[in-house]
Amino acid sequence: MSGRIEALRRTADVVHVFGHRGARGVYAENTMTGFQYAIDIGLDAIEVDVLASRDGVAVLTHNPRLWRDITRDMRGDWLVKDGPLVRNLSFHGLQSYDVGGIRPGSAYAALFPEQTGMPGLRIPSLADLCDLIAPLPEFWLNIEIKSFAADPLATASPEELTAMTLRPLREFGLEERTVVQSFDWRVLRAFRVAAPQVARSYLTQIRHGREPVGANIFPNSPWLDGLALSPADGALPQAVADLGGQVWCPYFGDVTEQDVTRAHDLGLLVNVWTVNEVPDFHRMVDIGVDGIITDYPVRAQQVLAGRGLRWRHDAPMPSVAPH
Ligand code: MG
Image 1: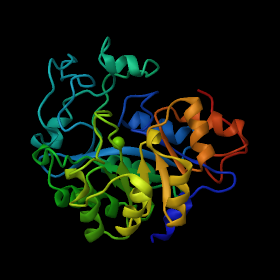
Image 2: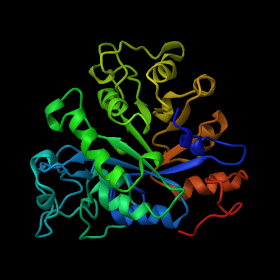
Image 3: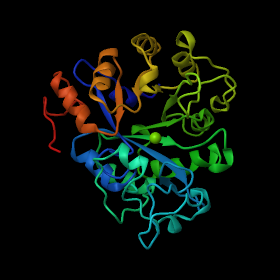
């Protein structure tokens, strides 16, 4: 067990809030502007997505291809279709794209109507983010490694992604306040081998019938590194514990109070993704989760403050940053 991860465990008056992709509801996802905002409103953790460039730089972006709905070219024109694979572009080449907003009129834009577009933002490297948070001794990175077990050539291999991610974490001395997570549990095995001191978080999403798309828990799933796993009877937290993980990170709609209790009995932390609506924040607090990943961290702070709770141990009691 990685000792420092206990700093993220829920206490009587603290439930941790992780800004999802920085703070996607407010600023462009996976950008330095969003990360700085998360720091400014007093969070102690953010979630970001990591892929690797052709020249081995860990970069912060979600989709394996440059996604047309959030990407403009160097002239400022929206991509007409999804662009190249991130893995096929150099870091320098990636810097010629603008990821400072969402294509107006797209379905994605309708999901985040409050997001402030800021043209000119670039895809950051993980090292850029490490440089930002290294001076903040209580701040945590929750790094999601994007690897697609069902489409393994879309990214570098789990071992390569692990090595490229570890390089800046080691350079900036952040291994002890990083949680690495993935839906592709092959990545977590690679991390366990290469850096057992880095806390690991096992992402799950249960397929309920045909929905939701993106599930990794279903019969014969390629995402589970060869494990045969059904969600019944507490099998998910048990599997995380058996694999030596520290955190179970289920989709919030999948998880019950019984699941959280089971995970806690196994010594795990439970963080849930991605919670954005007020009633859902309340339910997650009620069932006892340790951390909430959200696109709207101020909304989460307001819910917590309304219940006499805080989002970090040294936060003023209770106070909500203006937005
Ligand atoms: Mg993510």
